[in-house]
Length: 250
Image (cartoon, rainbow, N blue to C red; front, side):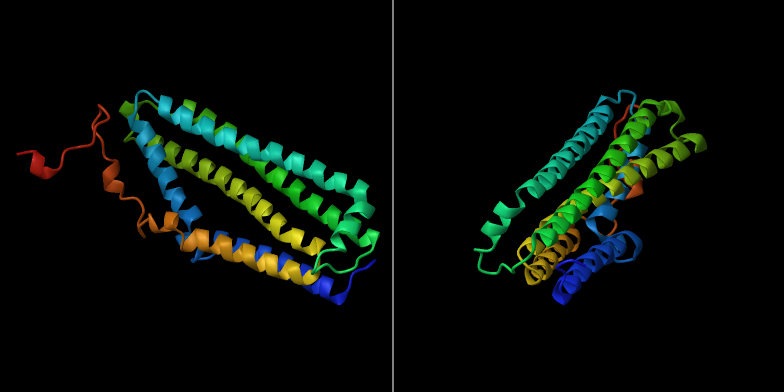
């Protein structure tokens, strides 16, 4: 391909391979089930269980709206990023002149630069589709929150099944949102290739290290125990107050 050297191919292969490998570990392996994203799914189940016990569900509606708004923000940001990447195609000569003066920059043709910009655009387009679908799923989830069974039926099989379906839908929306955010992070790593293949390898490796640390060894991850949710804590009285402990029933 025009302008691609062996080092470019190797660096690009490392970038794509690292992205795919990290995603598979997080989403499909036993290690990923101990990550921060997976642990939050337990709280989605707990949220739906508690929602069934509440007569007034204003808080649930507000949380759902916050999830939708955050996703919409990232979806619109993705479109802006796509426009920015495409605009760089119109300034190829000026950008290459600036890059050629950087210490680690590698000489490249205008055709190679344009191919790199197309690749960056594809990443942001992928992110947009993930955020847009996540936003749509949160819309469906908001409808389910509004259609939740009344509190007096919370212990029925139908109500429990509804809670699990709603939690699963919320988790699916969160998974697509995480994929969109992951694309943003790897897009930052991809920027290293604009200077040279060696920097692409370094930036990609750095992104994977940062993401891995946040999932498994960050302070936020340490806030969760191995068993993040104790289902016995979900028992509530019809009035919405936690049941008193045995020591308080004397």
